[in-house]
Image (cartoon, rainbow, N blue to C red; front, side, top):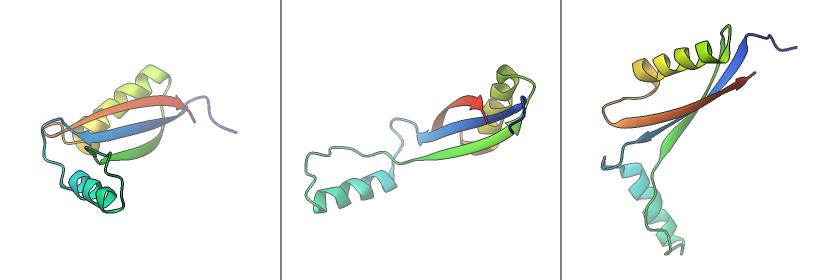
Length: 87
């Protein structure tokens, strides 16, 4: 049984527009080699799930935002978004 205070955050981190993405270029080139010539651009990012305890959704979101700013994303070159749901 899940706790009323249990939350899961789905966090998506990607490089900001204009930041060089060598992984994305490599994936795009690989897709071209496989015949997917219609692909013009690929950006590679990360998907992170975090489970946490918090009294409500607002508090959970505040903690996840802090985690993103301090560790999960590099705010200089990356952007992030997340959503919080009951675990």
